[in-house]
Image (cartoon, rainbow, N blue to C red; front, side, top):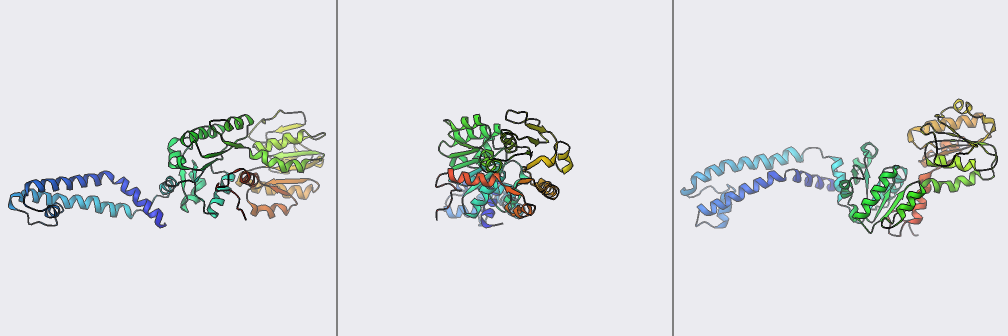
Length: 387
């Protein structure tokens, strides 16, 4: 535990013991006043020593009170002061509370809401470049490493005013909202704008009409879609291609890829989405939605002739599913080497594993981070360095 965390922990313990210390002070102050009244002729310094029971040769007229006071004062002092020191300061500090206090003390900083892949890149950049930031996330397990390393994190619902206060949004210079729930994104934006009319707000959201709403006054947020940005590269990969295509995934990017390919002449798309039975776009006869989890080649063969497929997009975004992505990629490369395979990843260290099977990789968070860097102001925590 570093010195700053230790000092914050002392502050927390003092707050917890506020009432006992106030009672101790009032008891001493009452004793001081009584000694001042019943022991005239003594200096203030002597009265002060009497009240602390450091000096005990009191006049005979106040012996009874002095004896009672001298019995109670050491007991209170021992119970409150020494109990505080021994019972509290030597206990293990609470890293969650400490991280929250660290966030609360930030000024002119960057607030990140939601610990998604894009948020990870923003935070890594802030740490690497020593920029002030704090994170709001309601899932403690996701940010356990950040908390244990002493980073400023607020565990709680970002729509709650208390969470925004702990993150000191009122003093923030910019806020990045990277969450999947549109309702939460809108609520957060509205609350943040009321608390801080000046800070810049960047909101990741898919729907066009929601983006338009967030951009309008009084919210004046910069809204963006990571899937739209990612499509810039994907359009190049699909341009002028022929044959059937398979798209595997669950999110808006997956749906956007499938719809885009289905708009190309003489192409058919098989969308494997095990959680949804529809997409945000108008479905046409060349777009087939299959509500299955495609883990093996046999899962694909049940619905499509892979000999007629020319492109496969594997767009899972859960880290736990990378093994399935790699396995399916290897099998496609072995059995159907004519198929172009594109795999979504979030860790550049995995590039070599995927490319071993002649597959191309892409990252929506990496693309989004670069695009955001081109949109933020020069004083932003993620603004590109000027060489």
